Image (tube, rainbow, N blue to C red; front, side, top):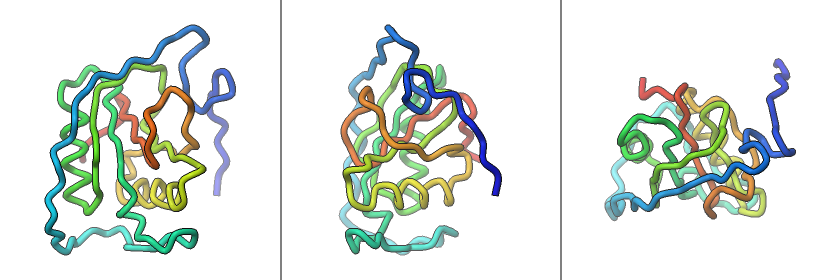
Length: 150
């Protein structure tokens, strides 16, 4: 196992520099269908020791921090196809160094869900605790130019 030091301005993992304002535009994700079909995902359907819920039951918010139009929607659809629930996707502007699944440490199962999402989608480079400028939710995925749907 290797330990990598990451840039953390203002003590927040990958947040904006002082005085920078993050912006979030409003785009709701399509309402997930009520029917659940079995998936053939390579990620395990593990449970959270804290809540007893399946990690994939933890809802996601997906934010596009790139200039690629529609990337959050595309990623949301990809995650939903993999068995996840996306409650919202949006555009976002902040100084985030790499694609990251930010989890709310106060939400039971959020860290385990973020780690399981990263295991299923290795293009998510990091898993970190959330910082104040992110919208509320157990797991917020911020896509940066290093994100790929492949």
